[in-house]
Amino acid sequence: KPPQVSGDSTTGIATGIAKVDGKILVILDFEKIVSDINKAAGLDLKGAENAKATAVTAEKHIVIVEDSQFLNKMIVNSLSDIGFKEIRSFPNGKEAWDYISQFSGYNGDVTNCVAAVITDIEMPQMDGHHLTKLIKSDPTLKKIPVFLFSSLINEQMYQKGLSVGADEQFSKPQIGMLIERLIQILS
Image (tube, rainbow, N blue to C red; front, top):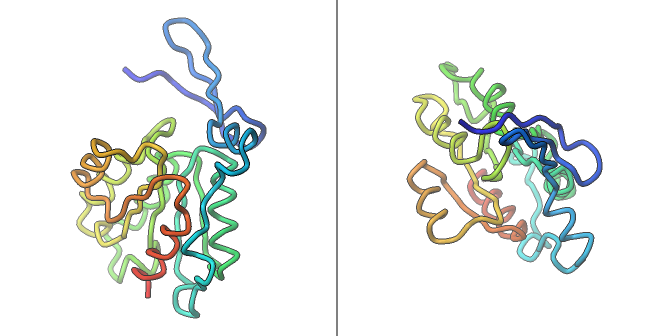
C-alpha cells in the first residue's frame, strides 16, 4: 500500500509529507533545489525561442500536472509568454483526473475542453503514468494528447509511457522542444 502523502507544494522547497513505517518524511522539490544550486540546470527553452501560439492555439485549454511548484510555475509562464491563455495547473494526477474526468462522455470534440495534458511522472496521490492510462482508457478522453515531461525519461520509462498511451515524452529540462511539439500538434 502506498504511503499517504499530503501537501500542496505552494511554498518553499517542501512539496509534502508522508508517513512511512511510522516515520514522517518530508518530500522536497528536487527540481527547485537543483535549479537554485545550478542555474544552468534550469529549463532549456531551446526550440521555443521563436514559438508563438497562433490565434487558434492560444485559445486551447492546456492542463499542466506537476508537483514541483517551481516547475509548475515555469511551465505555465513559458506557455503564457508565447501566447497561451487557457492554462490550468494541478499539483498531482488525482486532482487533474478529477477535473479531466468530468468531460468523459462529452458529446462534442473533447479537445475543445482539454486540448492537451502535460504531466510529470512521479507525483503524490496519482502519478503521470496512471493519469495517462486513465485518460487513454476512456473512449471520449483518449483523443486528448498527453505529454509526459519528467526527469525520469530513460528507455524503461519511455517504454512504460508508450504502454500507457502517452503521445509524446520529453525529459526535463527540454521544455523548448515540448512547447514546439505542442504547437505542432495543436495547429
